[in-house]
Length: 504
Ligand code: MFK
Ligand code: FAD
Picture: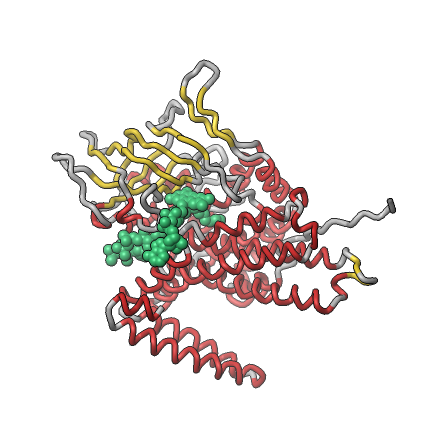
């Protein structure tokens, strides 16, 4: 046996190393804002490569479990999480992961500041990013409900930087009959109480934030004769706290935690609601429309998880290529290996730019500064970015593992987690086909205006790019393809939804 041991790949500061992120921020942000946030981004870039990354790994190695009874036989349904998971809760509050866009210290740019942190944090966070995504979504919904009980009670906790005050939120939409088809699949009923609250009865089939402090969920309000309205017009949005003031579960039973391919860090459970006390926060029958803001936010977080995973894995692969020697030279000196990494780099940069652009538009919307064009673009590219980056992440994580050879398949390198966890990105928060329908929904609802907005945005950018001689020929090709697609889709949009589906 020889003395050789392969050196392991190492991560450097994720902010300083990310040319795409830094150049995008430099291009779009006012200088003084970028100057003000750069020290924080630099320190955070270091943390995600060191202590935060280590905590995330611990969460993977110490998955949560369900302790259904205490020593004396009482049903307690305690979800036991590891210390690292709880530390990540505290770090999330202290780092202002949710607070930053709502504090609005930098106006519209606050959202992009948060987005930059999420891009680095998500793949390092041991999937604490998942409850945070839903927490951000709940915060955005709370803001949109004006003076509701959700805004008064929960909002201050959701945006707190004090770990002892900071709450996370779940998003309980999926039931056994329907995760995509929520409108027809939701069986949970809400029984009105004399004090204005409701009691919820039903079974939530997937809840990833089972240890969250609160949740938003959908249910059908029962009238005095015990009837409910079926379909989307019967769904209302509810806010509930998972525990009462004495720490007892709010008439909720955790039936079991799911045994999953990946996302093992997350306590994804099945919940029986047996009279959970809840507050209605939408008008009757407006539940899906009211939760749409949450869907937008969580889909953007999903895209940031995709871009962040791709970046982190590729940084590791790049570093490894300078440490691993085969056929007499380092693998970075083999042109074919570098061609592979360059292809992955291009995908990663494209995904990063796309999701940062969505973050910029969201910042404008947050601050009520979005033009009609911005709103239309945000509506169109949120589902597109989610569905596309999720697919990119699965493909890239698969090929990324290959770039480590056999070690990419070995559990204690921590590398297989990337692939396992990427696989869920195209499933939750709307599968690819369901999001394709969402794109069509936006097209039909705006009578094609989303496409006009897209067309005008892209042609403006193409004109700018075509000013450079070298780019002109490719711009012409893109422009003619774009014209054909837009023309076809607009024709289809004026017809019935069936034709539209075929056109898509
Ligand atoms: C780091 C990781 C980050 C992510 C972590 C996530 C953890 C996992 C969490 C989950 O997976 S939570 C569950 C997520 N579930 C979904 O995403 C559900 C997927 N299914 C859909 O999205 C369906 O398309 C939908 C449930 C929305 C269909 O419902 P409906 O009721 O059949 O839709 P309909 O009738 O077309 O729309 C009702 C209203 O909502 C309409 O408004 P109006 O009544 O005013 O016309 C729609 O315009 C509006 N709406 C629907 N989708 C919208 C929207 N508005 C804006 N944006 C949207 N995306
Ligand atoms: P289905 O709707 O049955 O879909 C099955 C297939 O049919 C898919 O390929 C889909 O694309 C396709 N399909 C469906 N409708 C159409 C259509 N109209 N046209 C073409 N194809 C279609 N949910 C929550 O509410 N909260 C959570 O916290 C949560 N956490 C999750 C955690 C994990 C790890 C996972 C895996 C899921 C989680 N989910 C959660 C559930 C998730 O959101 C749903 O599984 C997802 O939305 C898909 O719904 P479904 O499982 O009912 O699939």
